[in-house]
Image (cartoon, rainbow, N blue to C red; front, side, top):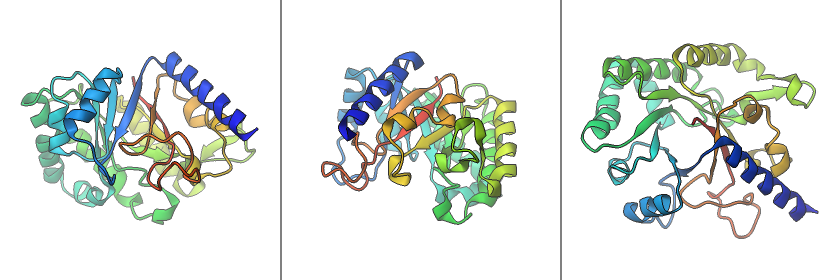
Length: 259
């Protein structure tokens, strides 16, 4: 029955992708056997992936995406949030080096900046709570100053553990009490400025979930325009980490992603 549930979940996932009208992949650097950049880009093009999320602004990776037309989301690591939150000049320099340069010089189709990566995960014990939103604001302001405010949007990739439900059902959903006010502030900012919401759902962090239940999560249901991204890093693995064929960094992930 377990395998039946998995296949039902994957069929529903493929249906969801069809409805959304697009699919993208995560392209990370935490892998033991990285493929050449050109090989990865060729695979993306041959398999008609329209979107890619980079966990960091790696210049070689961005140059490899030059003139491909693939929509790119460039990530800012959590360890950079403090400096970007505290310095508008640092935010402007980051945008100039990692967004403006690659758009104007290398013709990379950068459409989004991901500020942090799941910075509110409970395992961080609130480390990034004071700096994430100010960093988001500064990057947004830097993009506007660079003349890219209408082209490149900012967002914060959030783990599904920012949500809770008093009933166990989507209808009883709310943000976690300890970050509720902050999340409402962030959501209002995103609503006012037009950036998308981005949420990650991983069975490895919630082992009681099934592929079917993931497709019924409030974060997926609440966002009408999305596609699905598979794979935490460059290697896609469609099973949780307990499966022998999957390495520790190859957990299954489904992320809402803007069209």
